[in-house]
Image (cartoon, rainbow over all chains, first blue to last red; front, top):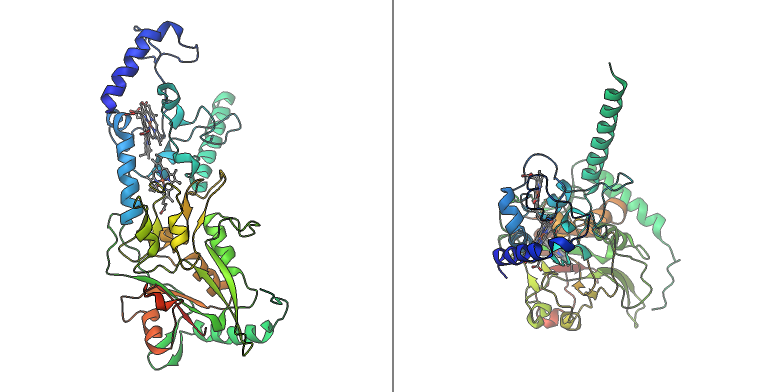
Length: 156
Length: 255
């Protein structure tokens, strides 16, 4: 099914079922007037994604499919649309401050999929957590933020 | 196979290897005119990440059974570590990307041990029988399973004369990021394609050279100046079930 038609269906379903939506579907701050709950994917690392946000939102599945054929059959190992990179940048920390795996509903790749009833099997094989180096970077960033918070709270 | 793996002539072997290694450290050891033994360093240069593989190279291996240690499992554990499978599988159906096999000539009693894995055939029967095109040969000769298209029918497992493929029966967790594996798909030696693409050697070859007898050599069969091609041109080598005419990429010596 074309992404556009799916989005249309999702939108229609949302309008119809808005009143029945569970509480935790928090509405996006930018569009509070409609009152329609939409999924709220956690923000990735940095300021921008590997493609225009609108584009990646709609076409990430095509990009990933293309990339996997290029990599597996042609040995092309560019980083831009590599699944490993998506996972590295879109890691979500759990309560234990470690990146969550796909079995956790707060995983980035589930933030919309659960909502739109999309089921992907990628993480039966692929690692859904950032690679060690990336995880270490995240942990470091986490501890730096904590330190910054502490220093701020302590005052000059 | 009733082999006594305790029998051990390793000390003597070890010292000979140490001598070879020492000599190699001094810059390579002349074995025969034109053939130099390099125990260290690879010859695969990394291709740019955005460049597709081509048939300029054909990757292959030369395995010297004469240097392969009796009872040594280094290549097997190296592969398992690298690719995240369990080398101590108890069931005959467990994953097995590479295994050691022992040969014994019933007449002379001569014994050999060698690693057996996907032989990366130029005409791979596993590719012929695959109904979805998941089993394929890369331009550089590496035979792979595209697990995204594998439906788990296992025709390829039956077709392989080397018993080199296995099937994942159970859900897995904690796979390596560079070696995704999952239930319902067939798998086998990838010649560490992720390492080869990065200009490195397969994990088994590296480990055998670092920690064992240096019995494995990886290189480009298409390049007549490569170490592997020179050795194949110089010494008598054999390919397993050469009668099948599959033109395997894995050569053996002293079997």
